[in-house]
Image 1: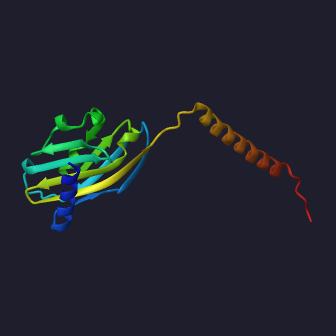
Image 2: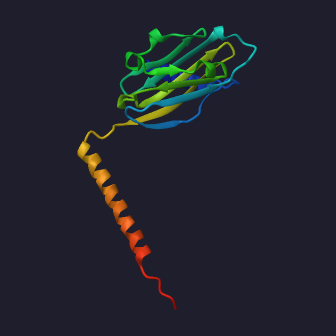
Length: 174
């Protein structure tokens, strides 16, 4: 499967035309349990029917390829979505009509990190857009968070003392 996707990327770069899929951001950074919106844009032709549009968005990691989102002949196919994304991906159908694929991925997990490829195939062209997502883990240690908060309070206290001493300092006149 990975070889097939890589072959598609190579073929796409060899066949250049007027149909292009772009990403709005090539690299995303997010924290675990947060939400993120991944977005791709593609060339649209208003006089064309949406019955011949195929979209396949995948997550590629070192050991797996997972389907994030799929549209077949203009209709979203949720059955093909990988189980790990079930209930966590929402698409903006209005944006799709404007040539934008907007996918909100909620409740991020660290294993959502990887390369996201979005292939768009229409009767007037084919192209692929790619971006990376890096999801970092939230610290598990409540004591670590308290230490961070405490040091921040101490810093605020220290700076407050400096400001206070500056205000109380007698003003000397020459």
